[in-house]
Image (cartoon, rainbow, N blue to C red):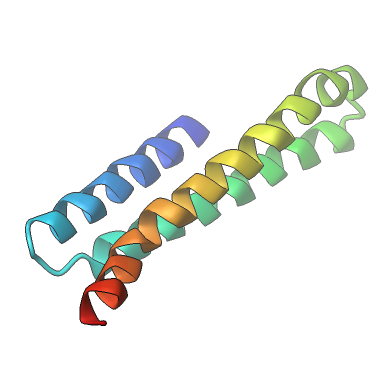
Length: 94
């Protein structure tokens, strides 16, 4: 499931950038991209919560340190890419 949500977030983000470049209304695609990024983070948190409930400490020790860094980086990239059209509009208005 996390792959599906992540893929939808990526596709929506690039749709957002394409629609801005094409001069179309991009705000719905931006909202979808950010929403699916948030859903992906919630899903990952649920995954870790499940491991804690069943006391699968080896999964936590193996996956969580690398996953934490990846989630931070990918979330920051998603936010930056999704708000880029708004920042470019503000820059062009000045």
